[in-house]
Length: 304
Ligand code: G3P
Ligand code: CA
Image: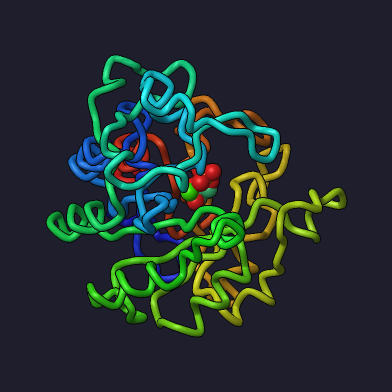
């Protein structure tokens, strides 16, 4: 096409299948990632948590009741416990073999549930195998490293082992590791050259009332250890649908911008629908988008 893209590379923005094509199939399953790849996603996103025997499996949460059928397994009834005010089953109380007996469920209300109970919980390495077989990149997110460290399971050595084993420890590898915790990314930066993406939900300069429980890091500070930034989409577009200047500031520092999450039931700012929202963020120069609907994001991009 003739479109002039405002991305850092000048290339069209990339489509990241957020948790797979999870608008259609249960998230974080091989089936959801495979559908996303068929729909033209450039990148697939596994969120990573650790089993009690130290294996990365792909789940958004440490707790299991929302995204699996664990509650239907009488053999795990006594495994349930309260942590942080939540009464649930916790992935780091289960071995990989036990996790394999569970099946995935649709999490988000209003989405198809007819595939619930059919699909396995994959390991990170299986997702990397799938991506390699199809020539797509991955953007794994290490979930809550400080919580796993507190539970005696540091995700860092296992992550570094896997990345080195697969030659994904270089700056030009087709992967970027994301995390909300700057300390974890800074440690990782000391070990490997893999591209790192700093996730941000809030920024001091945009929001006077910050949640003290969520880490914040300024763009100017993250360049010491991160190679890109993954902001909540509301940091890019204000309540009237106008550019906040975030992308230009990040680009001036050499940081590509991968905002999240574009889906059919999650408008921010002026409440635009997903297609309008995508077109606008592409126009502003987003380098990649996390979306639950990769087919939509590919179609909107390719029509520009
Ligand atoms: O990793 C980007 C985005 O996925 C962050 O939000 O909660 O969907 O992991 P979450
Ligand atoms: Ca994520």
